[in-house]
Amino acid sequence: MYLVQDLEPYRFKSDQAFWTQLVRMVRGLTTANKGVWPDPKTGKAKTAAKETPPRVSEVIALYIREPLGVCGVWLADIERKEEERKRQEVLDFYAELKELA
Image 1 (cartoon, one colour):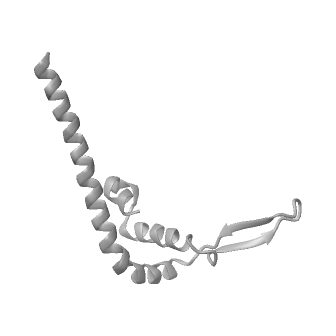
Image 2 (tube, rainbow, N blue to C red):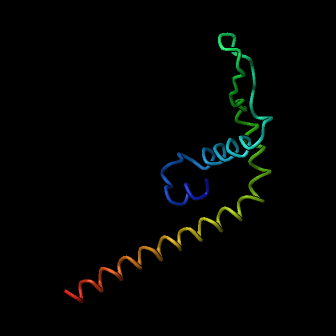
Image 3 (cartoon, rainbow, N blue to C red):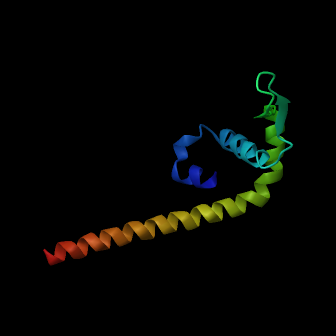
């Protein structure tokens, strides 16, 4: 999520939207987040993510901000530097090709 925010900052309308999505992703890692019920037609179990009220998402975001925030920003920075390095390699390659021609 931090990479998405870093690479596509227009993707989230606000910081609150980013934190809400991050909370949804973290909650999706557990089975407690999903409601399960039997489908009467097929007899198979169906699952769906439970929605949380906005205030609950805000509280959960407070708890995950500190441990995930530093790591997320650090990873986004590493990814940005890696992309810049790759872009520079391509530019150098084309410059060398231009010199040969």
